[in-house]
Amino acid sequence: MMNIKPQASDLFEYGSVGLFEISDAGTVLYCRTGEGIFLDGSTAVGRNFFDEVAPFENTEELRRHFNYFIKCDFSSENFTFTCRVKNQDIPAKIKLVRVSELANNERVKTTIVDIRKL
Image 1 (tube, rainbow, N blue to C red):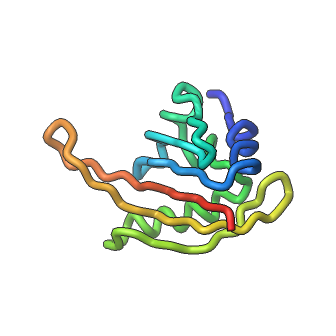
Image 2 (cartoon, rainbow, N blue to C red):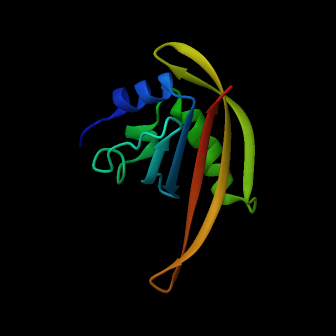
C-alpha cells in the first residue's frame, strides 16, 4: 500500500485548511484542501486517514480524540490541536462533525474532520 503522507503534508504545510470525510474505521471517503485543490481520489480516498493520509506526524493524539468522539453522543466537537509537520509545531483548530445518512437502506455514519491552521 502506498504511503501518501509527504504529498498530504506538503498540502497542509502550504495551505491553511484541510477537509476530510472519514468512516468510523478511519477510511478517507472525501478530502479537499483550503486552496481548492482536491487530493487525487486514487491517492487519498480509500486509505486510512491516521496511518497513511494525515498531514502531520502526531496522528495518534488526533486518533484518540476521534475515537472518543465517535463513541459519544456529541454531534460536533471543536478543539485546538498542535500539528507536528516536518518537526515544526503548527497550531490548528479542529472541528469534528458527525454525519448520518441513509445508503442502500442502511444508516451510515461518517465524520467530517475540518482542520484549520491558526
